[in-house]
Length: 87
Image (cartoon, rainbow, N blue to C red; front, side, top):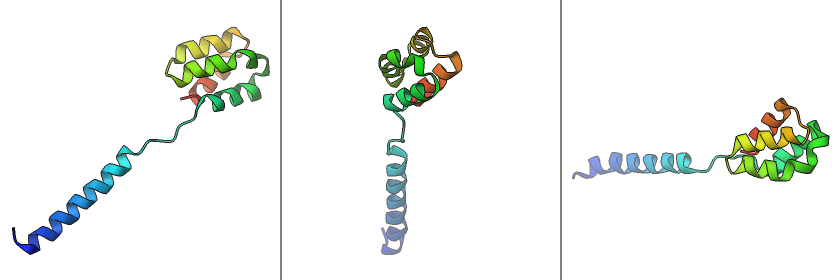
């Protein structure tokens, strides 16, 4: 390969590697604490069951998270929002 052809190839490889690092970087997400804080602010009467429910939301069981929060007194809308915050 000629030297003049190597430079664009090397630059292209570096650009792809850098782009791959951006794509592979983990996205920022909330956690169970964000869910618990949401519950404390919007449905204080449901804080007793928030820890377990928000953990369920964090591990991906949104249905269990919502139903658990509703069962301890949160409104359906507040439960959905809190469980979304846990993802």
